[in-house]
Each structure stands twice: as C-alpha cells, then as structure tokens.
Image (cartoon, rainbow, N blue to C red; front, top):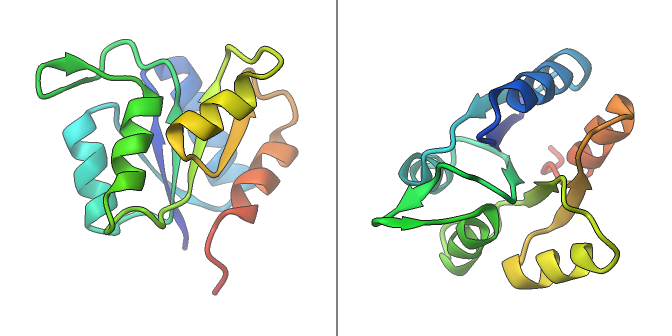
Amino acid sequence: MKTVLLVEDDLINARVFIKILTKRGGLAVKHTENVEEVLQIAHDREVDLVLMDVSLSHSVYQGKAVDGIKITQMLKSDPTTANLPVILITAHAMEGDREMFLKQSGADDYISKPVIDHQAFVDQVKTHLPQD
C-alpha cells in the first residue's frame, strides 16, 4: 500500500484529506506539521509522496518559522529526498501563483483548496505515486 505524508496545520482540513485519501484512494496517510518529523520521515523513505500545505502557521525549524515552500525546498535540495514527489496544497491560488510556488519550491504539482472534486484529487495524487 502506498503511503502519503500530509503536512497540514489545520486539523479539520487534515481530517478531510485523510478521509478522502484512505477511503477513496486506498492509501495510507501519515500526518504531521513538525518539520523535523517531516524531514525524518522523508529521509527514512517511509512515504511515497508528500502533500504539503503552503501556509503552515505553526511550523518552526531551527528557531525560524517556515512554510510549505521552504520545507519543500529543503526536501528537494537534499539528494536523499530530492526524488520524493511533493504536491503543494494552498488556499491562496491567484492567477500566476501556481507557477510561482512550483518554481520557488521545486514541487512536482499543486492542488488548490478547498478540494471540491474528491475523485479528481485522488487521481491527481495517484499520478505522482511511483508505479509498481
């Protein structure tokens, strides 16, 4: 079974995503907003894909507040985690944001909140999962 790491600081959103991914997607989900934990999980190859909320309001790394863009940059710049697919999730999707966020972060894709079409969300996630 494929495992997704959900990095999301809003517990209500997290619950919704977890439910969609497990029930509809048949995926296992780990959830944390702790940056050290995210990096460790990615490093240990415990997950196949990361769903990264862009605006993490509580996440701190080495004493500094970090957002999903920054964490994605950290994952993508580390050779051991660079190939792990990262999909950004954001509610702040204005025209041009998508390209800017993708370029800044090095993420593989982008999903806008709120997620209305659950099946499309699952399908989009699954396109980035490694095929066996």
